[in-house]
Image (cartoon, rainbow, N blue to C red; front, side, top):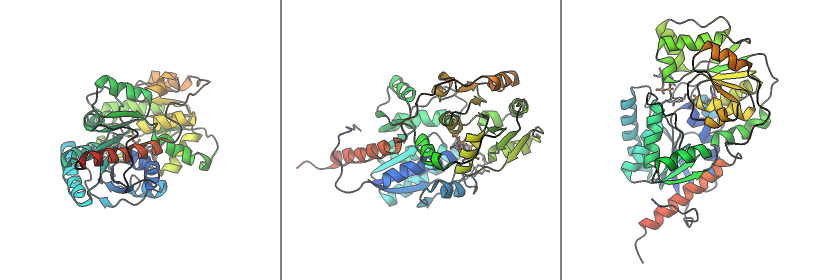
Length: 365
Ligand code: UD1
Ligand code: UDP
């Protein structure tokens, strides 16, 4: 699908089927939904990949995302089943809703189900948060984003590095640097986030390779135990299940709490001395707040956070972790995730794609 940014706008509002499934998709969907509301009719579909109230329902309320029109109830399943069932159920919704465009975001199984369903139904596809790469084959997310990027018609890269990855892969779709809707979300909330700086380290852990191996999970906790400040750990359900399955106890200085609603998370981030995480979203938010971050991974997709000196890759080595905690923060923090208006660009590109598709479908006069 060729897309000109100047494609004529359709005379009727296009119908956009927008897919969410996991916590970060809900949070990033909120500003995009608000921007789409001005120019299109959005049908929000939740695959149900995340279903705990703290991961889904409470996040939808807290972020003021409209209530999804459909919840497909996919739940927790092995990856292939989640992908297949997601695609099948999304195809049924597409048949009923007849959207002009499908929009997926990020790199979850919901993302790839949505992308595959769009292609199977012949509906043009927008991928938001396109072009990120970890170059790690043992991450399901890497497979999800590479395949989604190969089949998307419009690819919204959150930063220039993501665009460069897409260029070097020679993807067929049209690539645009839009900025990161997660940055939009944070900027919307920034004036309302209250609280002083505290003497604590905020941590989150949920990557498959950090939680599925008990030795690695233990090593992550050994890192956190080196913090000179008490550790607050909003515990992802995957990690809670892994700790219980392996019978692993948390260090005495680590306080696990339930996952918190997004505005509360922003306050915890802003007030932290340091953030330690393996989350993609939390690494970017640490950067946006100007809070030093230590990433409990050997690599990151969000390389700008490392290149600017605000994020240190410590892997799961306690000595490296401790050294990273002592590293003084840089003096400057360039804007790398956009200007807080990514959602508007994404909405405009989505409408333009619908217009271009309608033009192609129109019979010759
Ligand atoms: C998923 C995404 C990951 C994203 C993360 C955000 C994939 C492959 N992974 O990982 O990219 O960073 O969401 O948080 O799509 N569980 C619950 N309740 C829930 C959801 C999950 O108990 O509401 C537990 C279940 O034991 C489940 C496990 O967490 O098996 C993993 O959930 P899943 O959605 O498969 O992957 P995440 O690790 O959450
Ligand atoms: N988050 C939240 N509550 C929590 C932990 C995280 O609202 O208890 C938010 C966080 O602020 C960020 C998003 O969840 O916006 C990141 O999602 P997650 O870490 O689950 O996934 P990832 O970004 O790694 O895909």
